[in-house]
Image 1 (tube, helix red, strand yellow):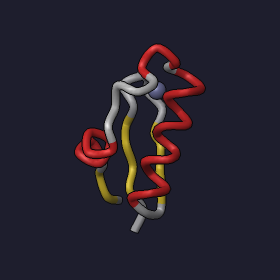
Image 2 (cartoon, helix red, strand yellow):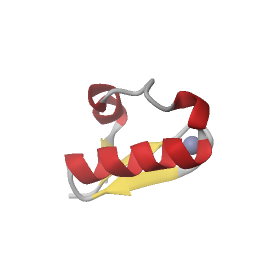
Image 3 (tube, rainbow, N blue to C red):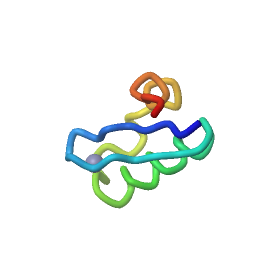
Image 4 (cartoon, rainbow, N blue to C red):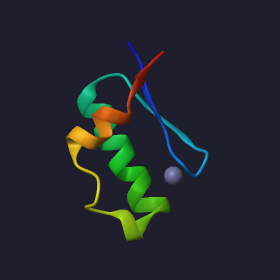
Length: 52
Ligand SMILES: [Zn+2]
């Protein structure tokens, strides 16, 4: 089941598992929101996730 997080910047980050989703969101934050690196815990990321 694919999970996704709609980032406030308008981009949607997807992953096929919890680990992949968290990794992809962390990558996206590093690329696009370097000021937010370290401010999102795994639990927060998974709390924002929606299944599709
Ligand atoms: Zn973003």
